[in-house]
Length: 446
Ligand code: SF4
Image (tube, rainbow, N blue to C red):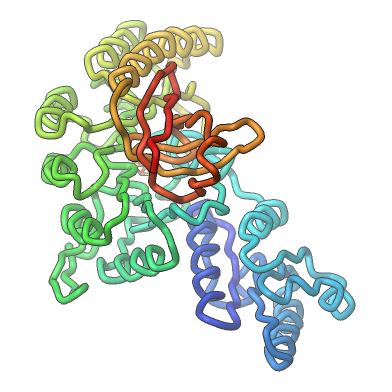
């Protein structure tokens, strides 16, 4: 079965800055699950990223909008000419929406409104609420499309096809461009990050006068040269993941692993057909923490998969207690249209799923709180995501927390620092307190 993802046509006009904007928008749309169409006829909607600098550029932009409307009909306009919306609307009253330069957020919102995409709780690479594009200091770096696994609750391989990895030089070029544009934290994503490069036989390529293979460890090595935080998401615990832990211990990449375990009972993992289900995960976690005591592990779990018995669930709770994961997301199982598991017997009732979820969360929140408490009294380098002068606080993150999904560091009393802090800056703080989700801190004098 092949289910098609919605396709966006993209026309990018103007200067290199506009091109960087286009790349960021395309990265974001792909991350959300859209595909980019090669031409108007294969697109479900077209975005025209315009330029309005010179009269000739305005004319070119207006022509491009007209052409997109003729060829496709569904058009969103963004970019510099977006500032002159009256001019566009006078000529083309039927465009679906207009947004200005670097107004990524409204453009992406308009794409979602005009061409909705289904969100799958267990497999989406980003949270249901979507990701904000406004912070310019972090960016998602997608290293491959598709997936070679066939988890029974998932239809991603049907929608996106088999694993299709980008060559390492291509990934590094994008990473470098993002860093040059001011990005200070790269979030590496794909459906199965540790499988990166298998499909292209770990193709070799040159980047920065060095030969790298298109494989997980080489990618981590290459990204570590960029001098920014590098965060690995959607890593499955295949044995070769061990190799990346020393890089984390040496501070070359962020000591953070996002591993969607989904369950701990071998029987349920087998029913789910999860990759790496035979790996002894607890042993791996212990090994990693011995090498890199600072390692933060984030994971997600599905509760109430068809056939989950009380025994399986107890096994999961015991795993939680022993693994002491730092951050955990948890969903009750629900059917995804087209997934194999939909025909599985022994469904778990809604009430029982809910009851198990609550039991799970009680245990995990105690663990998360305990894990966070160990930071109290320490000095941490944090990146500032948001400043709220009216509340006299700033929201920041340590290297142990990913944006959007994990907790934050609440820096108090920022107004006494005379505006010396800004969004996207790294600053040093002392952690003063913690609850089960967030940390509190005071700023060091700079
Ligand atoms: S690893 Fe499994 S859950 Fe993830 S995309 Fe592939 S098939 Fe889906």
